[in-house]
Image (cartoon, rainbow, N blue to C red):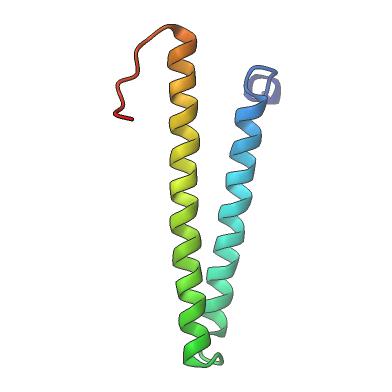
Length: 87
């Protein structure tokens, strides 16, 4: 089953997915830490944590979208099709 999921053709894609998974887990751990320690942290520190979490989450979403857009366009070019996305 693993051999069907990971092969030479999609190894790069699977490594990108692994990186995205690790980044999401790290962000989730930061969120849980902030929520757990929220009653103890000073208000200013807590707000900076939430600001950092929201910024990191937004960047993670944007980065994932750009990675998959690039991959989609690369697959279209490989198959000889015209992209249907506005650049």
